[in-house]
Length: 327
Ligand code: UT7
Image 1 (cartoon, rainbow, N blue to C red):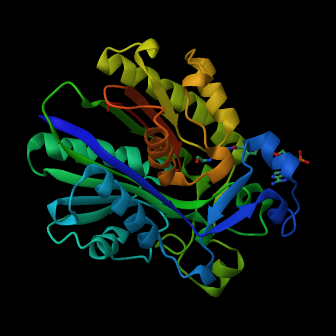
Image 2 (image 1 turned 120 degrees about the vertical axis):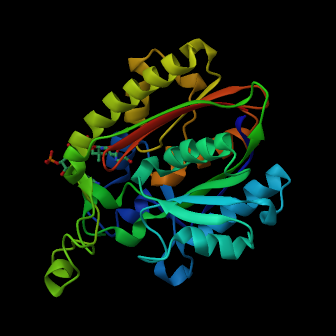
């Protein structure tokens, strides 16, 4: 017994923000953003839009449930991978549970930054394998712009707001989650983090003045680690499942930067034609990025039943993970 993806869905923030619009609020250009990242636009949830992370999660979840043909009351588990939840506590997953009317589900958040969705997939699969749960909704959902410093051009051009979801159910045939791999390295946490508003640097007039509540990133170092770790975890998950790169019908990598995606593919000789890319339209949506790309691939029929998909991600922590699934 293991688990299988029964349906996928995604939802974006309501407001489209183009590179040209960004260049009017911060010292940047469309040319710089496109050439360094591949991003052309992103969807965001502005404060005046009145949309919170659990709204995006519930929207994505509803579409995934509809695709799976499952009622919310059949769910017994909801995991939301997020670092930008509705509030400090309780979990964004419980607000999502309430909005969906998933009256029989346990619900909790998982904090692994961009890797939150793939970590959640591994965990939900393990819980289904043990028989503890039968039907899970795994979501990656973020409103990253809620902790962006709009005067910091090295970060504010990168992120978008969205959620992506999959419904997992029991499966006994040769399809489903074939293998997963996950790792972390907290020694490098300070290369990509939000230091403020926790017990480390408590909220104070000083912490606010220093913008401690916003994302701080050393881009170059993150970039180098991302390529190395994603290439390694792809190798590890292939080894674990006994598959070769040629057995993979579609690679769904984390959508942070087109250059990271290309460099990762190059490292293990994987063709870009078989790689899902939508960073140009969504920007980096952190934990939401992989389930959104997977949902688009399914809805555009780039993949279908029987196809093998490899997902790989790297994010703050550092955390990184890969999963191979047969649809
Ligand atoms: O989700 C996982 C976590 N995040 C990532 O995976 C992001 C990983 N890192 C990256 O994608 C890249 O490092 C960035 C896209 C963030 C930056 O690209 P880069 O090629 O590494 O640029 P850089 O940071 O080395 O900066 C090059 C120059 C600098 O100017 P000087 O010092 O050479 O004069 C920056 O100040 O580009 C400047 N710069 C900008 N210029 C225009 C930085 N941001 C911008 C900007 N617009 N938005």
